[in-house]
Image (cartoon, rainbow, N blue to C red; front, side, top):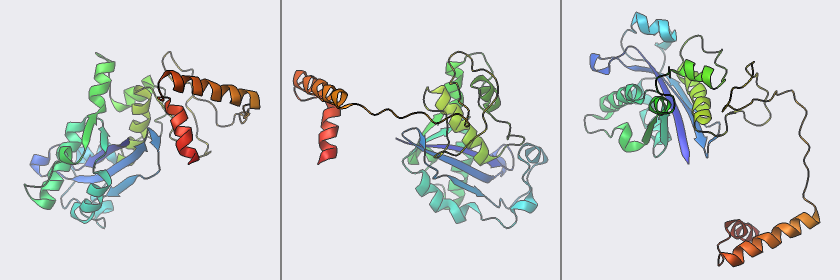
Length: 245
C-alpha cells in the first residue's frame, strides 16, 4: 500500500484568478511506514505572491526567482505520484491547484490528479471522527499530542510530515516517523485516552528474548494443527515454507 501525504503552498487562494503553486511537499508511506523517499520543490510562479499568502508561508518572489517552473518538474512529479493514494488535508484546495498546473502544462486534455491517483481528504475523515470540533491541522496535533512546535509558518514539506503523523494517529496505527534509531524530541504532557503514549528516545534499549527450542517446537505443532484443520489454509505456515524455498 503506497500512500503519499501531500501539501502545497500557493500565491493566493483561487487558481481561476491566475494563482499558482509555489511549493510542493510529499511524504511517502509504504504499508504505513515512512520510506524517506519524499518529494519537495519550490516553484517560480511567474506572478506576484499575494501579501496575505506571504504572511501565511513566508515565501517571497525574491526567494523563488531562480527556482524551476512547474513545467520543468511536472513529468517527474507525475511519475512520483502515479498510482498512489494521496492523503491531503482539505483536498479540494490542493487538487484544484494541481489540476490547474497540469492543464497549463499539457492543455485541457491533461489527466487530472483523480485520474492519476486516489485521493483521501484527511479533513473529511477528521470531521467524521470528531464532529462539531475544530479539525485544522494544528487542532488535530493538539488532540493527538503531536509536536508541531516547528510550525511557526506554513511549509509544504513540514506540513506534509506533520499531517502524516496526524493521519497515522487518526487511523490507529504507527505514529512515529523516525528512520532507524535517530533521536527525536517528544512532546511533553500525558497522553489522553485513546492516544499513543510516546516513549523517550533516551530510554534504555529493550531486551531481546529469543524463543526457546521448546517454544519453537510448540509453535510449529500449533501451526501444523491449524493447517490440518483448515485444509492447508494456514497462511503463516505457507509464508514460512515460501521463505525457505
